[in-house]
Image (cartoon, rainbow, N blue to C red):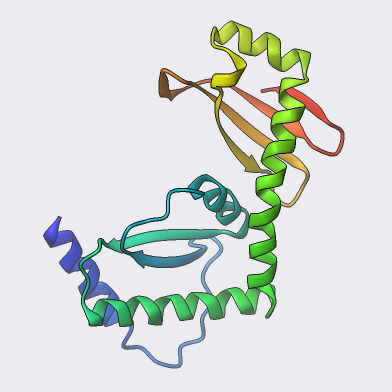
Length: 177
């Protein structure tokens, strides 16, 4: 683990030495934010879902013990990422991103309401043999549409997907996929 951390720090420090380079990440790599310290896991699933929509990845480069050099290099790299996001989405990208975070939480409530009132969903849930109040799920928005993909996990084995559903919030429909 120490070797990996040293190599990552080495990479970050040397990649920060290039100045005045126009920031334009490839579509495949997306936008990357680096972090360190104890992660906030309270709303991790919401952030991950919104990050996927915005093509953002987050990489933890260190734990709680960091150097000033690491802090500076992370700040430099994250500033480049913010500049790239501004070039791609405009100066108000942060406000729109924060709004997506707030809206996603409400959408999850709407999705659950649609799911539990759907006969198709309840029949499929019955095949998994666990009660509706034990649902463990992940929700991902399909692009910028009002359609969401939902993975329903076995609450006893959260690595096992019982089934997948597609929820259209506008039409209030559920399709098992």
